[in-house]
Image (cartoon, rainbow over all chains, first blue to last red; front, side, top):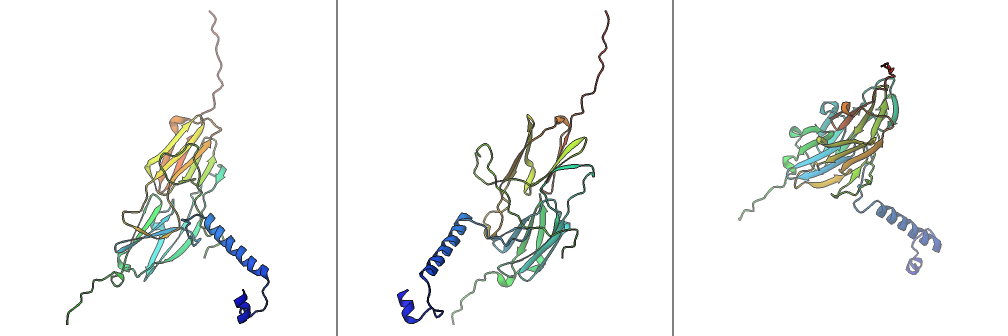
Length: 154
Length: 136
């Protein structure tokens, strides 16, 4: 604080000592909210569907939980290093006379684009849907794969 | 763009629960989202249980308590490293108390694309009967 005042920094004038306390309180709040979410908190983009992306060998695997959707009801496209998935979840119309006790399942449209860490071999992307879980396998492009470089002795 | 009829789906985190009995195996437990509706003849329950295979789903009706228990196998193969993890997988568990008497023999369950459709037919109301008294 003393040093700051002498060098004239910050330039926006006199800071109240409470300002510093306020900053500390904000930082504590931030730390607190971060911790309360758990150490392994998922950092979600908050867009439906939630996705898990994993990497193994020369492929990326993208998974999403889409119960009740069939593979042909999904619109999946790949360009360069992005994967986009869109579709609509429809709930079957039930008997009109049916009386609902609970209605928690939701219908609606969705669209999501994910950027992958590297380029993808667009021609070899495969997708399958089993038990309501979509799996998209995206092989890495030849240019994105690690290459062994031989050193030539001159 | 979403039209007026179908709204855009919002991302929702799965609701975690603690089961009444302690788990023998460690792991996460989630509540499946359900729809329950009733007609004159039956009660139908629809539950979203993505990742549950038909053989791993256990449905139990005992003393008017319906229990759904679905085990989920981790979909990731060996050696896969997380890049982004937005959701976790775990088993599904939910219990309901049924008010109506259910005809247990006619219960029908179907699991398709991660959605369970459970039909619980009501017991036919006891027919009024006249009892003939025989005179000896």
